[in-house]
Amino acid sequence: MNLVPILLACNNTSDTSSTEADSLQQTKTNAKATVNSDCGNQILFKEGARITYAQFDGNDKEFSRQTSIVKSVENQNGVWQSVVEMDDLSNTKMANAEVEYSCDGKQVHFDMQNLFAKNGMEAEAVIKADRLSFPLQLKTGETLPNASFKMSAKGGTIFTSDITNRKVESIEKISTTSGTYNCYKITADLNVDMEMPGMPAAALEEMKKNIPASSYTMWFDPSFGVVKMQMFQGGKLQFRSELVNVE
Image (cartoon, rainbow, N blue to C red):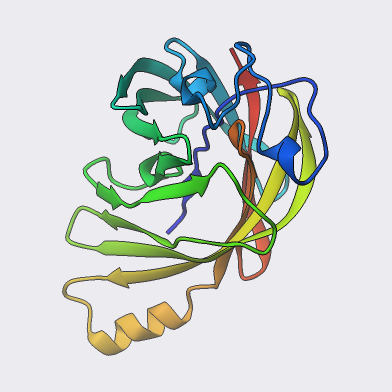
């Protein structure tokens, strides 16, 4: 199963500090407020904001772009919630989708439907996913909660992906066409399983053995969100996605 990362950021900057401790927990926004005290200053919680990502294959050739628009924002009992519409700009025939995000001042929660989308799969496929959580205060060596993603395709085939071993490896400065970001480098394993009604059990098990081990590396800025992501299969880079524009 091919998974295409559709990654949303939370903000943009042109001047950030490289200090590991407090500077990565506090960042300037247009309102001069910190992320922890005011999630509403993040771009994912600014109505009308537009965020564009580009996807590249293993040979660094761009094959897709997606612009996400923040359609609505509200604050419920101190928790910021936004509805974001994703608009695919490629020929992958991926249906547009609306995804909810939330921020409680301590964590930003991402709907994994926004991270992984159908590529060449039937439009009737049903996706169910956990929210992928990112604490706004991270430290190197920290282990983050696991998450699961399930897609039921037409005909009864079910693909399940479990994201495990999420670890904060290091701090790196990442530059894209949208700006420069101080990011935590987060690695994880992606374990894929499948159910195929009608296929003999022995044949299914043999097929599973041939599924290459998958993993990803994600660069996350607590002030902004996911800036860049790389996906690997069998240790080989399959594709990457990075933020290219924020308006």
